[in-house]
Image 1 (spheres, rainbow, N blue to C red):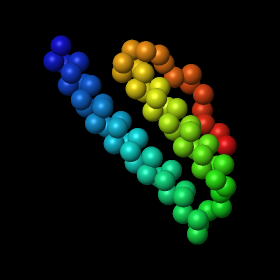
Image 2: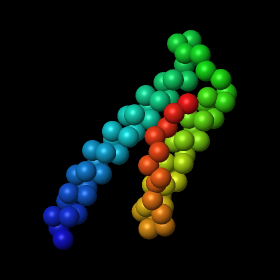
Image 3: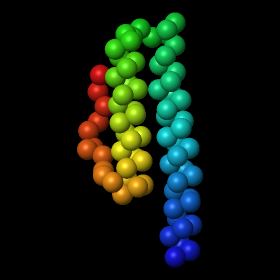
Length: 73
């Protein structure tokens, strides 16, 4: 039991920190002096990310799983 907990903590720390770093990189795309995008583009990005966060919540509450689709503008 303890080994499973230790592995969970180890992987959770690594994966969550990687996910946060990647989200920050996506956030960097909002720099209008470096990139050109529409409000529709921004909405699609936020919607796709929110969908995955919702799927993550469902997995932890044993409700459902993600459909596995990759995001594309």
